[in-house]
Length: 587
Image (cartoon, rainbow, N blue to C red):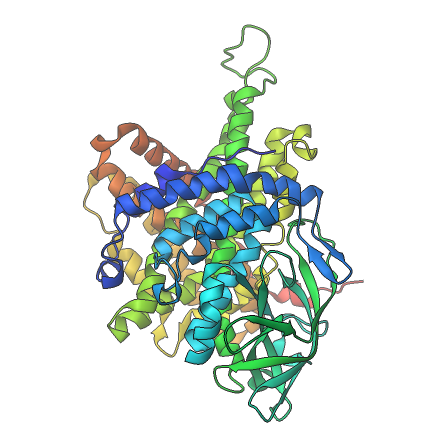
């Protein structure tokens, strides 16, 4: 089984030193969220993840969730761990105190999401969608539905799901067949089938609150006719108690490559009672509140799995002997593999990506809170645009690089990495879903180039580039070599953005073929931007903690020397166009 130690020092460094968003620091609701409070929370989070949840990863992989007589049974140890998990209040961490939450900002809850992803992604998924459902209900449902359902979801006694996909449609939700028939009492009867429903059924909570997209019988076809409904597994009585079983059954659960402890279900809705959330035929707008936040969380899943893969690779490289290096230190014929240049390169690649991603995620967490809570509408909108721009980047880049890192971790472990004993191959398998669900990474790339670079508020990508230019125009001479190199790649991103803009007018196949390359270029440059912010603090506060900041400076140097150049490679590949791709004759 892999070992795991939560990277508390790095997390606290970010919270204490990079909480530099002026608009975020103006939010009154978080004025009392002090470093001491956050440190206490993260230390307790580390304990439950390292001691209680980490062992569940192997247990869930070896004894997956099963469907028995129409009931889903979670793996051994899950029920006991979940009971402790909700007793300690972890489901309520970022929720509104009005409904029993602790009201912590995403600058704190994102760290907990990362730890939980490192410890056991399968276990995490049982509560993760509940927070997504909470956010959607809180933003779009009536006060009556909020008061009836949110306290129990926040407490963790009830869980939530997101029911979109059907046998006939995945990304193209306009094709859905699930129908909603209005009743005289204002409720709806929901009928249809949903597939690939994460945590669609299980034995951890008293009730499961499904958020289901469906088409009312008198609504138009396509995405314009989609509405959103709250459909509980058990009907909730007027007094809030759990009533009779609703018309929902589990047809089967998927046998999967990874996240085997998580029940991925086929759900059948047969005249199930549902309650409309938000306005009729505006269901996708409401559901995207859940989906967009969930996409960021999926990116954090990739980061969390990358972290545990790196930690175990580093530990293994320090104890495994194999071959001699050019500057051998061995007296018995072999050196530790960490002395080999290629192993060191691989480890630094992991480390520089992980720490840069974590810093970028912290930046995004601040922007997210500003977009939701700032008093100035203009400030909120600008932050919302930046969050919208970076959501597909974080979702795709972090998960794709998570595949690269878990692959390299297996390689460092050699034959042992390929066996189940070390648990490294499970990290690879578990992470493989993250580039797929919540919209495949290719869909994310298309969404980025066709919808996110500009919108009704203007040219978002150039606003982002201007922000970066302002924040990286630093006077400290020690950082100048980094900012000079960064300017070169920022210029590539600018040229790439201009190329996309021009091609959008003349050849959209060129844009489509370049979408993944553009996302990667924007991603690598954005992570470099986060590293510049880290470096600025590292040079300014160097004497406070020399060893820590030396580590940061040297890790950043690797990123700028060895990782950031990929941005130019993606640019050069993309601008070769799509003619050969589109004209190629497949046999």
